[in-house]
Image 1 (cartoon, rainbow, N blue to C red):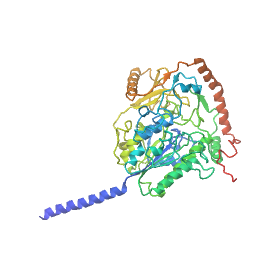
Image 2: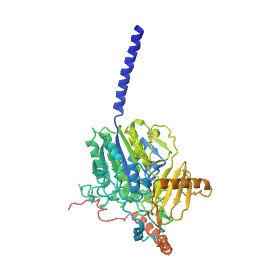
Image 3: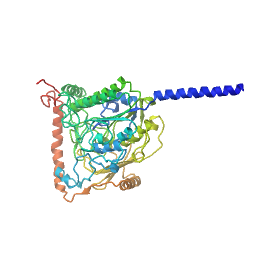
Image 4: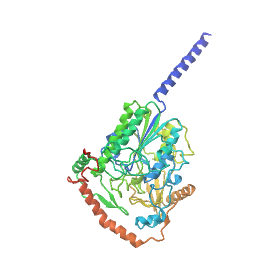
Length: 530
């Protein structure tokens, strides 16, 4: 009997301790908050932590080093709207149907661009489909307060953030760039002007910080989507001066551009205006991370940091260089789709860890649900997988293919193409003439060592798999333009080679000159009393 009492007593003690441990675990790991930071047009090498010696990004660098860095992290598209739709839906672009930035011309209307291209770009959806359950809706239906600040570019009226699961929307509407630039007045119907000359990036960060403070006692999903570092590139005189002097100290290269296939492309990071724009983005990240800490939420908030496509090295403002990655925004190569991709889960203690496992932004959807213990939605996030095992320090035994489909011409010089990447190989199929390129990653990450002729059998296998997948998702394709004029196309190309490169070099030198001044108010950043 005495022995039986001891056994029962032992069971009781174990049960009580178990309950106490479970209660402690619950206290240490309550339902987490989510902070998702998306930067527009930020290149893989535009951060100190990813190799830039020109741009200064201490807050983002610290965040990256406190979490896990995915060194082969990809955007689902080389341009913004399709990539953003993939984050929201967990689907690749050919599946959800938004394959180009919303507003780009298609079909015969493409001829009005006077580019004289061989193909007429495919049609695409102009708004995020109502049938999809967005990432925000998934969290909202599980009791989360949802917040959006910044660039949306996923449809107009009826398809704004508040129509797709966000309780609060600060600044998100149909435009892809800031209509009033980066200093108030913003000319944004979803963001009131407060102070003349106020910086847009800092304002969006402050709106997010205010939301965090106001909802510190609830559970939230906050999506901070900067308009930066998209064009127009603008900064203050003080930041321009800092980076002009830094460029001088690093010795300004004699030449900043070379010719890619159809447009010049930037080869050096020495743009002082862009440097200031990047640093302001980093300052804004610091504001939001400080808000988490000040409100005691930093140990229970998952933080994601990424970009929607590569840095702008061609077209637009030719802002940055993505070397050693080839290309940039709009291009089919690594510079157009490889992104900074960081996830911090405080209680997993994975600070400073890195993985080369290939991931893509469709993975954020199931990963965040999984980390928050919210039921997954496999019928929705069909093209994403949970990265929770990797974040916990385990292996992920899966060799899935990644797909990209862009049946359009990029403003930056990219060509209509589709891509399959599988088991370290990447095949690019070009729709103009059916040619294909094959690269071994990461050894040929600059996409210059095309080995398709040496591995013809492998290329055929990958090509067949790509075509089969495109058929399965009912992808849309570009069509040959019966009015294509090869002589006009040649004339346009020669004009680019002969005039554009020299013009860009002159602009570059002007920006680095001590006498440079864009206008009297530095894009409205200098506030004067009326």
